[in-house]
Image (cartoon, rainbow, N blue to C red; front, side, top):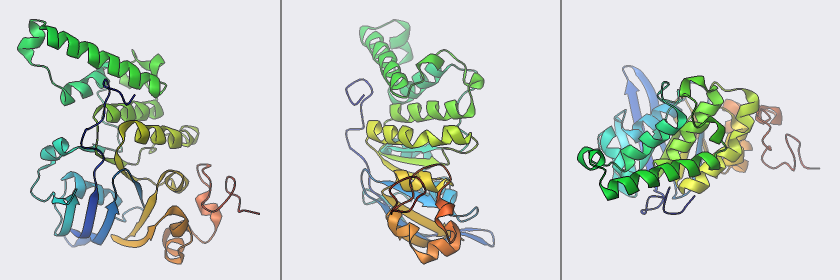
Length: 287
């Protein structure tokens, strides 16, 4: 999957750095001096209660919200002057909670559209079936077959998106992300609205995505065990401020994080069946 058909961005995974970010919505301060660093290839999880500013941070990075103060840098370059549509060529890809796929298209058609956006073929070349246009079309279809097989959704290839379960649509969204070749991937609640059984399958799926895309990931997710199982670094927000930041083990044992969100016991971490940090099995402390 890392070969020439699907490919990866030759620039490699990006480094993201936020410092002192402030976002005000009228009289409400949604983000209050927040900062984080996602090193190239890292998986950084943002956790916190509803209204803590997690999605707003993703909106700032993707350009949907302009911060009132602070800096946002990709590979050391400020993103302030970039419009949202100008950030895509930098390798920034955003996945939304509502999984924005075309319901009337098939899985294969949606994935081909992703490739068409990344590697367009001119209308004239396509119409006259120029040799290079035919070759490009063959390569795109081969890439779609590869990514469909990798995510185990081959049996849904001819199904319309509207016919799929929410969980399967999420998997199609992950497959389209790989084809978009992200350098920085912003994932907003990938397990939102799906059944618990399907949510448990997302840890290996997201690991597969990370492996195939070779990207830096910033993940917003309410499923704390999933975050702790997947992420190399965790940032916890409360009322727009960073309460705790570190490895999953460090955050799980931080009294500030426990008091603010995680609760006072390990039961708070035993939701999706992922191992509790510092334990040797699901939800169980080491003996």
